[in-house]
Amino acid sequence: MSHERGEKITLSVIKADIGSLAGHHKVHPDTMLASTRVLAEAKKNGLLIDYYVTAVGDDLQLIMTHKKGVNNKEVHETAWNAFEEAAKVAKELGLYAAGQDLLSNSFSGNIRGMGPGVAEMEFNERPAEPVVVFMADKTEPGAFNLPLYKIFADPFNTAGLVIDPRMHNGFIFTVLDVYEGKALDLSTPNDLYDLLALIGTPSRYVIKYVHRKDGEIASTISSERLSLIAGKYIGKDDPVMIVRAQSGFPALGEILEPFSFPHLVEGWMRGSHAGPLMPVGIKDAKMTRFDGPPRVAALGFNIKNGNLVGPSDLFDDVAFDETRRQAQIIAEYMRRHGPFMPHRLGPEDMEYTTLPDVLKKLENKFRPFELGYKPIIKHELEEIK
Ligand code: F6R
Ligand code: MG
Ligand code: MG
Image 1 (cartoon, rainbow, N blue to C red):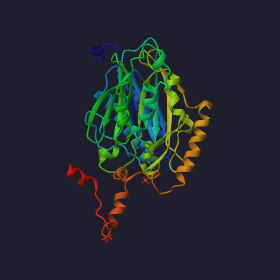
Image 2 (image 1 turned 60 degrees about the horizontal axis):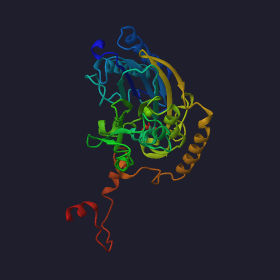
Image 3 (image 1 turned 135 degrees about the vertical axis):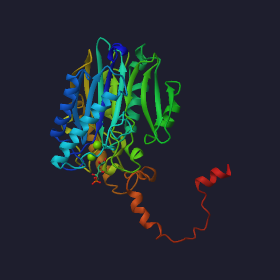
Image 4 (image 1 turned 90 degrees about the vertical axis):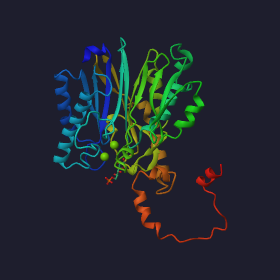
């Protein structure tokens, strides 16, 4: 019941690839319409306060506000129904990979672990509550590690860490080990080097939350990894992230600043290549060159009494033109490597794609070869210890 939770507002961003136009390229507007109808009904019934439907690449994005808290069954079920309705339309239109991310046939209480990506946060609305919703395609949740580090821990990015007394104490990062299902909290600036030791491996260690030291939630990130849910490669885990802005949180410009560097992320073609993350406006959030390059869009809202005011399409701006040009140059450079690492990802990440099936065929074609030395491999070293 909403009144039991006081006046706290929950912002839920839930996304799924339910099929797209002309390949893994772009969401079809009719599928957006189908999901919008479901959310409109939920708003009419009072479950949702407000919603905004958008798309980035082949991912349909549901941005919703309500008073039900995070992981709420009714809200998740509504999102699931919205995706199912959209997938029905995708099937009717013969869109590609219709229903791709809906890994289950029926909803079972919580959308997490069922395919869609989820980022949610609950907070007491400030008199002015600016938030940014980031949505990336053709990459994975760890793609936000580097920008989050810069936003909340790097004084060369975020001037407020040095000059705003409300931010000067630093932040607490919750880091997930997505392979083992473990989490730990690291407090910056004290634990800065430990934090970097983990999050520099973004395919395994993913920043899940950032809190201010007074306990206020500052950021939340989706952490679902589809291949680890389905046990095989069925699409990359294109992530979403929410960041609160201003007055005690980083300024809007400090939140956007890290994206002026098109850092290399994992994903791109077949989820198996490293490429630059290119910040784009929604109109350019469609995947073309080599199914990419990986892109990120950002929508800025103000939340007032739970209503979503806005959005502003934040990367649809000339200030990011030079970043996009750099991203093109990097994309060109990386592409010239073809199937060679480090453009193509290493064996660990390839385990979660379809390459092992190809390599299996070669296994019994290998014959013994006298190297002239006995290679010491890692697991033997561990036995010696
Ligand atoms: C990556 C992605 C695409 C597909 C590629 C092959 O996340 O969605 O790059 O992996 O287009 O798709 P299939 O195997 O469906 O032909
Ligand atoms: Mg797709
Ligand atoms: Mg996608």
